[in-house]
Picture 1 (tube, one colour):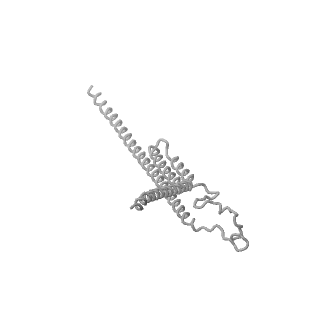
Picture 2 (tube, rainbow, N blue to C red):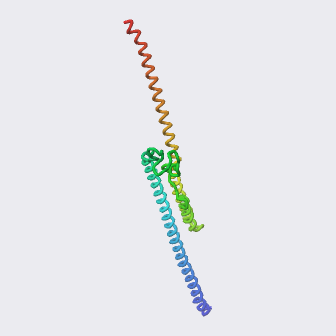
Picture 3 (cartoon, helix red, strand yellow):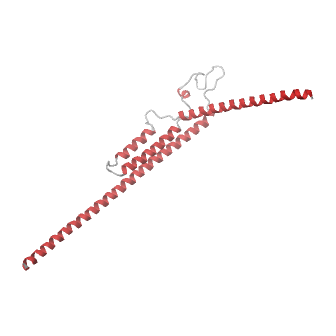
Length: 212
């Protein structure tokens, strides 16, 4: 048994060493693969954050442009000359008869217009957002976070654009006008009531003064 044990022992040691080497190689390969996956995950997360920041910046810029355009339109509305009557012909400058509405005169003031061949800005942003999210793998953990951030940004921009739309601003102006008229009527009613009270007090005091 002595020589056999001596022969078997080196073989067992060689097998154990081979198994350990294979395990070490698998561990190293697994660590490298995990590191590569982590790096790819971080890169995808950075790209998603960068794209969301770009979309948020574009939404902010568009909102600022809408606000500036609206303010400019409100300032220029008081100084718009629709037509000037020429002495005898009764026509506006440029040969347009008075009372004839042109396409430019019928266009509402202060409302942004888009070119016929140009898509709306909101649709362009939505397409860019869909393309950015489509590039993300379905099994990526970044997808849910990117979708959440993108939806919040787009919802914020949509809410700002909707709040600054011409219809909403016109409705707010109409409601403010109605509120001013209501408050004016209320003040007039209070003034009439006060005058009625003063006149009644004077009528009560005048007989007493005559008797005295």
